[in-house]
Length: 402
Image (cartoon, rainbow, N blue to C red):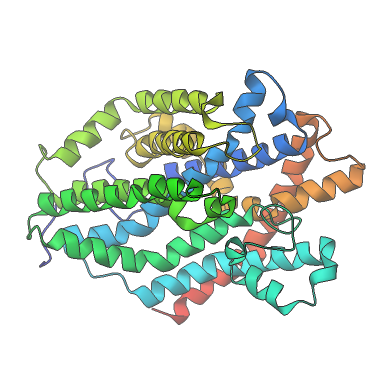
């Protein structure tokens, strides 16, 4: 498809590949929601009866929000290249950037946690290979209890993210081949991309059924196919953004969709809140005790997808100008929290365990707020230092691969 002339974005309109401050706000919200969820489980607040406990118990919805955000941001250049005729994504540079983005800081936390709490296993070469390569999800008989060694339990989701990073160029190539069969028309290509992403999202319910039949295999819940629907939802949003800027017709479906979102962002947020409230009910299973059955698993992935989409859509297509949504999600504080959010994710269990050891509290005890405040402060401090002295220097190495 030959490059085409596309009008410059109007005032208040973000370009297809530009930075959106509001998405930094989404990243900040998701990272601290995960932290609050883990503190709520450590203090048992998420296991208590009542509405507050039910809401805290479903804070893990922030993980699908992260996955959808990754789908949007990482697939957007592929969608733009296909629909606008921009230069193709350089896969080698893309993979190099992804590796520098996640591995140095992650490796630092792995080494720290292993030497703090798993010294009996620091001499095991295979343990280091598994953890440093983010392959812990695929060990069906690990020596650790739960989702990972002490201090690293949350890294199962980073393992899923890494798998998506590696597979994305292949997925994008398959989607592009399918879309090109619709010819050079932007609308046909965009629609075929959305159809393909619908098929990708359907992998998740199919995988959930496979997890339970012919017998229940809980380890499959942490394998990438179960989360495909979350990534696909974000990728679909990337297609819409690219479509908006590739089709100048103001009556195109994508531009009509954008106007509808800009006109009522609160409706999306309300729908997301309602879906979250339903997810906090028993329909998604017992709190923090795994997934009870195939139906609770299916309800969970559907409701969590709705929550992620309803937060991501208005943040991706915010009203132009100085709107309340932009002020809340795109201010300087949220921007800073979004920048250090990766470190917040990485260090939170280290902070939780260190704090509990320092205060001599037992697991599943303690007040939620009384523990949340100091744990958040410790986590934020470690995250800020990691961002300044690990993430930023690592990012400078991007220039080695152009």
